Length: 307
Image (cartoon, rainbow, N blue to C red):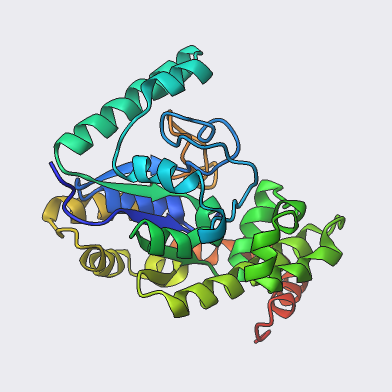
């Protein structure tokens, strides 16, 4: 059967809610969820069964001048064509075989039933325009408040290597603002680096969204404050049927009590970070993780008012 609509890409910087939004859209029952094919780490990335191309950079930049072999590879992914032999040649551990069975079956059954592919991939953020223009994806870009975003990265002890971005000449050509990250490339200041990444990503997001009607920017805080209304609107934009079943699943997933682990865990064969949460409580979590001085500093670094 032919898919009933275009593929969907949910992207945004890591810890901006892409797994949450992807899972809530997949609750429609009309999408096949594909987790982070551009992630350079295995798993969930480095799976040639899902994506028959080799990822060389975190936040891989893909454009028309550099789309070989990406166009063929992603055309297969969004058409739900699973490459069994390629996967088996590379990944043979018991857990790999379980993932192969899961994705291979999901792709095959999804294609037979006319399902659409949903790519949940924060590492596709800088290539969002290419996904919209060359693959015809409906692209949803999640943007989180910078203070909450930095607080989340701080809690997890995450940092970023700007060499991954600065080492991509076509990215610097098309988005010269990325060059401003160079002075921080060797810095140990995690707050400054994470705030700079947020600012650079927001600049790219605003530029590509202004040029493409296939890209929609959604604020994490706006969606978390009223998830049912927000997801009903996204369902309509994606051409997905809003059913009582989807509404119940979203209500359950977005009103769960906060877990002791803080709402983050790599779970399941797909290693997705999503778990049920109270989305409204997530809006103020940063106040428990950052001092007033750190909050003011992040607001200054991201050019936001301190009030």
